[in-house]
Image 1: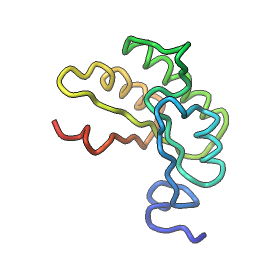
Image 2 (image 1 turned 30 degrees about the vertical axis):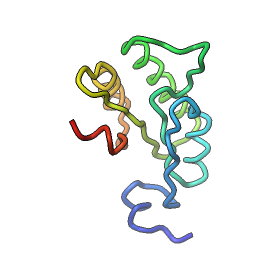
Image 3 (image 1 turned 90 degrees about the horizontal axis):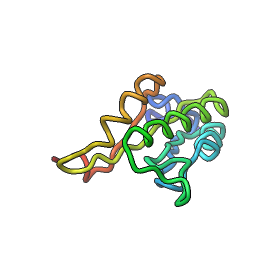
Length: 117
């Protein structure tokens, strides 16, 4: 497959962006997509299960930090993080955005409905 403009902008081989899938994504899936030439995306609950769910912004940010670290160990290719800002009292995004910045990730996304406030 020939790289196109999207692939060039994202720094990937194939113009494929894996959906973040909230609970279903983890470092292994995201790295596998990246290693196959696409852009893997960690969901906001990446690496968590019902048994390991966390309930505070700080714990969520720590878990995301861990998943980013694991992903970087498994691939050298670009990947992103999906954020879902909540309406009025968004306590999650302010906790996770600094993690994304400190880890040097260039790509993050939000659902279209979450961008209107």
